[in-house]
Length: 442
Image (tube, rainbow, N blue to C red; front, side, top):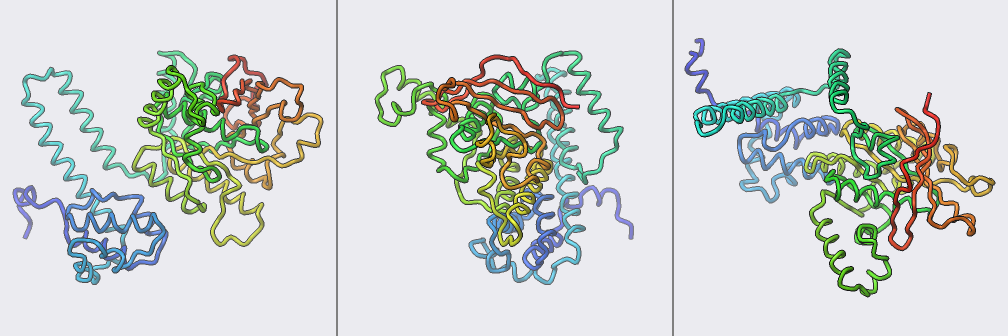
């Protein structure tokens, strides 16, 4: 018998059996790729039944922490945990089909909820019609984003439309193009800031200041520009790393902060810096990372905090668990994985890298691309390669404050040199001018 239109309109917008089947499938499958797909495509709120919502959240937490997903680990700690044993026979043949149903029903519930909210909005005579229209449009956009399916395929024409729109906006409001403001005007001028989907290398010999430069840039972006950032400190303790940010922000030398010999003005600046750091969308971790755990933790942070820039200090500290081939090939695989991560998560992955000793035997100590340590694959995978140089490190008669940020590779733009001023007691790099030298890339 055909279901009447009225009955269809009153049908519940959830399917308990399908939700149960997905949970059963997660605890019984050994397909890692399938798990990754499921955890990427749906969120806990997609589940209508509260038990399934919590069970799914538990499954994903176990996966992200590298632990086994099975009936015991999932049911442990859940209210009515033994319920999981009753749904095991429902394990689906195709998880893909079932998560599609869950997403479909979730979107329909969102539409239903939004319709109710729009109805109330339309009857609110105290709100100006411009606000009613604006809020209605935002609600519709939110539903569209929820329902969209990104399979990685795009018509060139659609991309061209997006490019045309971007350029039209720049024509109407001409100014230097900056995607993610680096906090450095010279860098923004030549590089357009940092960029979503880029893999960026900052390379230098030890003790030149590459970690300090990364901290400077990360703090300027997160604290001054409110750009969410994730900093993997693989060598330095996270407390030490954040401590270095304070003299950089306050221009109080680090020794005075360490000894507590601060006057009233300095105490005020110190307290102010602490409060700004507390409010900043900057996440720092010093936990040991393999490549796989770093990838999982990045995906999680992007979902939870909207991360736009990922900092890795430094590349040579990363390892692939169980890798048995040469170190050169391992670093190449790491580099290409980080590039794919940048594209997938739409972040700029900025990895610090050591340089080999070859440059120390040359008369001109400025780094070049072949100086990248151990792997040509790093250079090939990177969109941008920056090399930090301080001549005073090699020649004591040189200006101790002079530093150069050499743009050695720029896939989408010009090469050049950015002159910087190095304030060692405050771990701080500042710009000297807005002059950029070098020829544009062909």
